Structures are given as C-alpha cells and as structure tokens.
Image (spheres, rainbow, N blue to C red):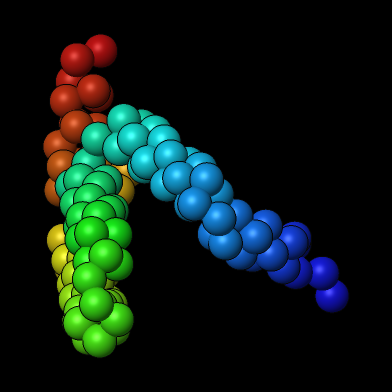
Length: 127
C-alpha cells in the first residue's frame, strides 16, 4: 500500500531543516502557503491559522536569539519555548475547531408544507 509520497516529503523537509538556508526556504514556503490560504479563504479560520503561524514564527525568532546564551540557560529556555509553542498550537487548533462555521447551502432551509400550499394556491388563482 502506497503512502502517497508522504515519506519522501518528510525526508525532503528533514534534509532541508538541517541547514540554515533550508530552514529559511521552509519558512518562506510556509509563509507563502499561509498567505495564499488566507487570501483565498478570507475567513475567521484563515485568520486564526495566520495567528498560529505568526506565534510559531515569533517562537522561532526568540529561539534564534536565545541560542547565543550559555548552554544551560539555552536548554531551559528551549524547553519552555517548546512547551509554549505546543500550547499555542493546541490553543489555536481548539479555537479553530470551536469557532469554525459550517458552510450552509445557498438555498437555505426547505420551505414548510404550509408555504408550499399557499404558493400553489396563489399560482392557481393567478391563471
């Protein structure tokens, strides 16, 4: 059974993430895809997704600046940032699931039986 190429995609992302240039490329790609999604959807869910991505980017920037600190401080702060990032992503997912709206049909609810009879009577009298 084929995995649809997911293994190759994961391997490619893993290889890119090993270098600084690859991480920049992945970041640019993620930002591009997010902007395309927000522009195409223009919905609350898209804005929540953008907020979650921006929070993740902020965590990455903070982690970059903290890499210059001592090893002990860096390890502790990275663990805290990993936990905060996980909490932000989980919170964003909860907000997305809680506030998303189901798309309703363009026709709306079907008419009631009384309304159908009333319209049928009007059509019959109008002839």
